[in-house]
Length: 55
Image (cartoon, rainbow, N blue to C red):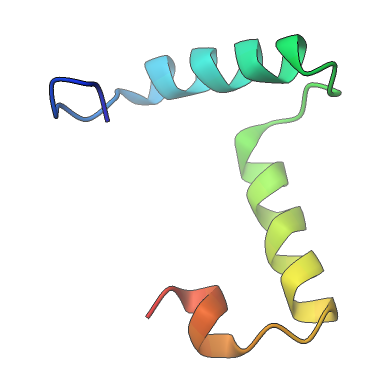
């Protein structure tokens, strides 16, 4: 969300994420892949389902 409360477009979100990866010196990965990797990491480290689902 912008400071104005408006939602980012997909392109804006992607651009900001890739810029942040560059600033932090991280390898550039697609956001979808990063999301999948995060869920796998959480599942493998015994994070409860209700936390992973966000409910």
